[in-house]
Image (cartoon, rainbow, N blue to C red; front, side):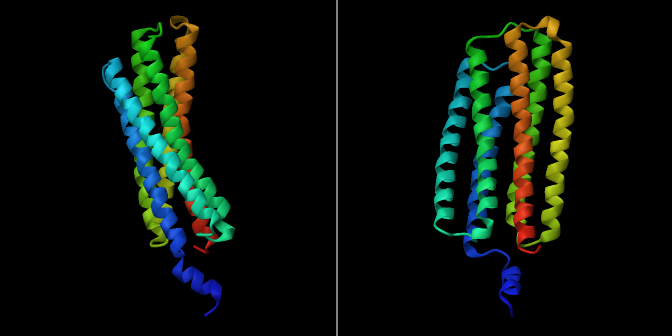
Length: 230
């Protein structure tokens, strides 16, 4: 049996399988961080103590993610995965770690405006924060499916591709939510001061970035599978 046939039959080498497991752990940290972010955005405006608690938890998760990312990069540098796949795995880890970075940035901005409230129309604020919570909730579902994708990759190709398509559809749904929110913000400019307007735009785009990163990570898993002949 030729080497390439053996490679496809085994699909993942032990180092690659272990990398997928640990990337799944990194995605789990991201899912937990997004859960705290949803709490910050949902329901009645939380007090500073609640917002600060969630921000601190997200900050701790982000630091754990940085440590895991560094460990993975060091493992890749020692040749734990095939040299031909190093670039894809590096990009995959970076995409998942960036989700934690976005969650951390958003939480800090929300804490900042809680400490120093913006002058905004209450009804506009409620709509925007509700829409942002919806975007982040889509990200939570994407990460949950992404972790399933990592588990299925190398076991069930058809199921893996189906999961990747579902993650892509969620990102498209998020685009529709984002566009509706931006329309709402721009349509309400007369009710908002510059700081409020700018904050809503920036945080909405950052929330949508999370969904894009989830799709990017999913696409990279598919790229790895196809590189191995799936």
